[in-house]
Image 1: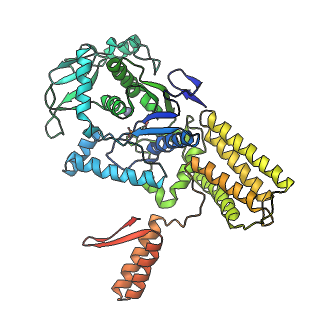
Image 2 (image 1 turned 60 degrees about the horizontal axis):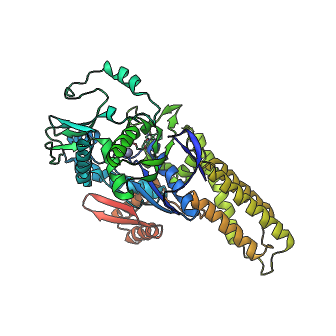
Image 3 (image 1 turned 90 degrees about the vertical axis):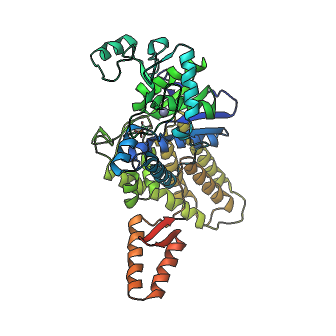
Length: 466
Ligand code: AMP
Ligand code: ZN
């Protein structure tokens, strides 16, 4: 299996640290809002990487964090006049709902930064003891020049960085020895969440969180560390400096980065305001379509989001689901496979091989999907009611498995969109007003059958998916 390693800028053959096992860390979202579909790209892409490793028989320890202490969370909390925890807890729950709807498997561990503060203090202390960090008036900085390999991931030259930094003087950072140094611990400001530490009340910097959570759940040396390409510098560069300076070991063997999801060729981001939330998309489409759309491009390529491409993905996915449903509806004969059928089976297996070859080549899901379309075509021309049961079930099994590795379901689900549910709830309210309780109950039952649970509360009707 080959994967592109940002560290070496080459496709490399994957060699695990421990035979048959993969230790993988994916930087998760900062939870101050609903996740947007740009954030969904790494979730979907790296979940697919995980699923392919599992398909190949690896046991994957998959860790993905929630960054639940951050300036943006604090700002939002102040705007709403609530505790930062209220904001982060709310958006962790919402992110988990979206992830489930996108068929992103639950991580082996989903650590939250605020629950790992002790580990962060320990690592910062070790870095100070080893001369890689220093405290200055409640702030702790990493001494960047003490780590000679700084810049090895982003291929940045430390002297160029220094020159760039010299011009920018940031107030409040007078205690810095060198403009290149970055923050590991920052002192408390009024109204902000904080924890006691040997350097006073404060909170951790963002980079130290991932170094610590990765170490705790995966060990000092891991196989794969992943995230969006905007994280290469400074986030991942700083993680390497912290972890390697602290542990004296190579941190991650392979660094994988997804390209951006763009709108009109501009990065989709909250700060630019040009984004769609996953929730908005779920009002129009089954999120399986979003997943299929994301995987229709190579994960390292930029991907432009458009209504046309979503429609194309919807149709493509529908073609696969229709073929799988047709195959499942066939009874077939009890006869043994004929020679002709054996030839068809050999073609099927060759296409499975093609799919695997695409995935083994740095997870080329676009080509893997093409192989699935070829299987669909083959099934449409070569498998019918007159085929043997044995051949039919082979096709069903292969299509289900290969789609399953991409996290795509092949059963037609009568997916009710949020808007349909709201409409039905509205009709039920009307029926109740008109004292037509039979009709109101019938609507409740219809929704229940489709996995929608209603709850009558004082604030009105609430619903959730079972
Ligand atoms: P954030 O919440 O900004 O820390 O982002 C969480 C993850 O989403 C990181 O891995 C980012 O690199 C990734 N990400 C954010 N925006 C995009 C985008 N437009 N396209 C692809 N990945 C993105
Ligand atoms: Zn991270």
